[in-house]
Image (cartoon, rainbow, N blue to C red; front, side, top):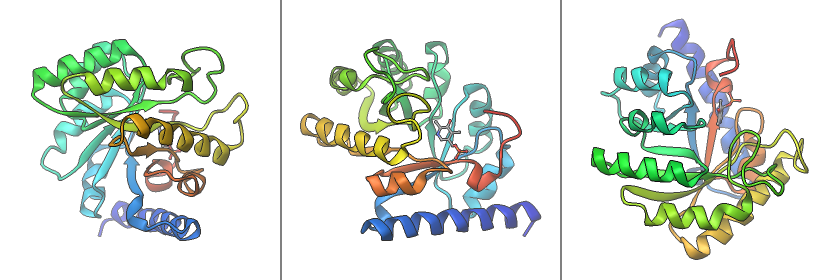
Length: 239
Ligand SMILES: *Cc1c(COP(=O)(O)O)cnc(C)c1O
């Protein structure tokens, strides 16, 4: 194996052990949690190696980087997740390769995603990004819909042609009542997910937890963890 492959294999094994331990500690089955490896800022060659190592879900957050990478890896059996803030002018490109979009947070984006998914003849899984730091406002600092806006937005996604409501996503807030309280934040997301599933029983995905807090997310009940630096290494720049 190449050095890079050895390195990624070791990191992946470590993350896999962390997830397995967290599942065991929570009395959950390992198969209840899907690992999504966030490959942003890393080259297509790394994505290829990860695929060889058995990774099946990858995520990106910038269309400019993701589109050529997904094209270079089109032969691989991968599910692509788009986890970044999404501008409507990038929607057509993203719909070309993404299977899931995790940061749906406004009606305008729902309309654009639906139009392009229909046009491309694809069905796109949509997760609503929840801003747990949104307070009274309708959107968070870093995007996301306030908890009070989930039901309405979920209804729009569920009705939109070409879209399937997958569930909820969050990023542990840096400000507000949940700052520094990752597990409490993820438990709040689980409560919101339970509420959502009353009206949308198939919206079972709960995307939460990154390199630093995947244990807390698994403990709270996350179904998908999004792990970047713990697998690929610390990114040279914020991406
Ligand atoms: C970068 C990113 C991750 C992964 O973060 P790490 O700390 O590198 O594991 C997860 N989710 C989103 C939305 C991201 O942008």
